[in-house]
Image 1 (spheres, one colour):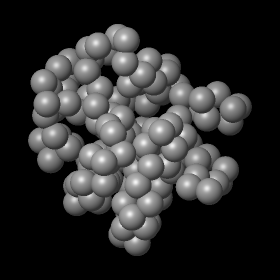
Image 2: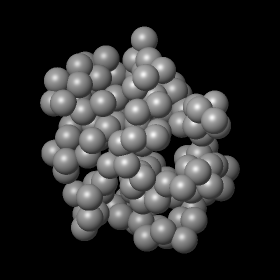
Image 3: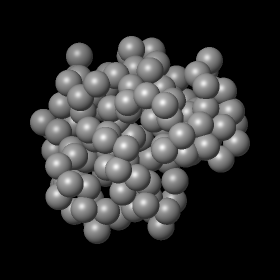
Image 4: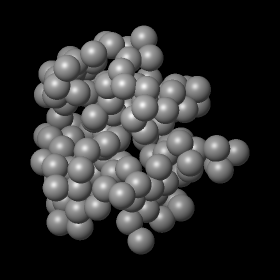
Length: 135
């Protein structure tokens, strides 16, 4: 419902290759770490966004989306649903083209705001699961 096949394909293949991954840290046990690795293997430039601003998978981290000094195409959100809405709003504010809420991250009001702002959005899906299916 919140990510039809055409939107998933568009974001993964046509929206751009710079993906800010909000919630990505050097903690290898977290899902964000593995998903970012898959995105890199499929040619995406990942940008870690986490309060610690750590370098992850060889990429400089930033404490917030607003701190990233270059354009971001997609914002991939690995935070709890109650924190995800403000991240989506910040993605629109920095000029991102799309927002992706990971599996289990659902905020219908944020989805409506983000789509209303002209961004593509997928919610409650994982790009690491979807991207190999596009083959």
